[in-house]
Image 1 (spheres, rainbow, N blue to C red):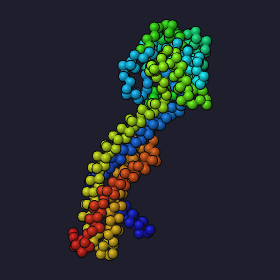
Image 2: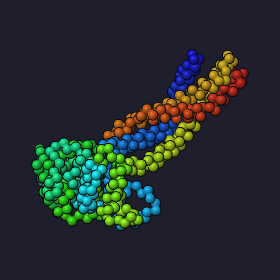
Image 3: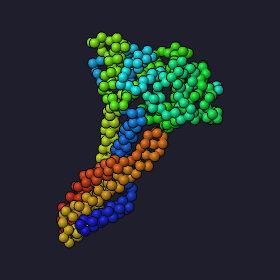
Image 4: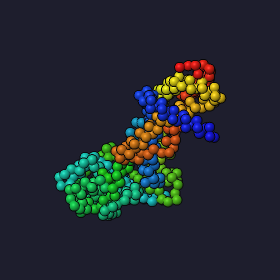
Length: 419
């Protein structure tokens, strides 16, 4: 045990001496290892951040929401022609009313549209990057939207299509720069005045799924339908359904499918002309992207590690050459081959760990700024750090084995005579 610790200590200080005495050569050689570890671990960290972002978005809404629309979120049926998707009718407000009245396994049902050209403004000041959506009153319950100021519009306001609005946290923040109290004031949408009756709690930067209400304004669907001619083709109509507690997803899907087919008057052999989507489909769709990203990181990192490995091997061969005389003396004093082999392997591993540690530190330093810029949380996990350390040790073993074997097989007499 003591001899093992002494080998590690000696190898560590010899590695430090190698780095210090040949700074430029060592730095350039370790650069490949640093870039390789950085590339692989940075990609793994980014993929973890994307997965966590999607998971948090789904968890925030819950996994018991279904969306009825024209297009499926995943085109799993390769035998279904794309032009048949195009010919499908958009879900309508009438579909929503009939479906909501028939369902028994759904707690809340809502209908939304997002027609373009709303041009929301406050006192002739146009609100930037803001979307206006027409929704029914149960939308806040289905999507579990938290009202921070005021209230949402009531059932009667929704059914009468009254000019009222609930605005996102980002919009409220923008309005507070223009007026002390946005609630009770009016904004203009599609040239009509609507009264602000509620504000949604600010959520911060949007995630990968774009499920963020900060820059949205919600008005009653019938208000929109009464003042403009809604074109379903560019308004993205959709029905949202929150499943009741204790009901399985498959049972709810089956009930929705049966009633939608009845509403659309489809014959038994006719294919569904609508799609029932769920958030898990989105998560599954990203799995292929994540696998591709991991592969890209592995390929880029492997090339850099290959270069770095040759650099480490070069350092170790030079180290063996420079210390041939010392190796001969050690062997003459009784040092075994395994001792010499282990000493140089540890030195090679430590050199790779120096380079790998720099790569991990770069990931750690960049995690904060990237998190702030993207709105997603980038964290160097213990798992990814361990992978980086493991790869560094592996590269050290592979790169240092031949130089270490050469040192272990030196003839002690010839080694002592060498200069």
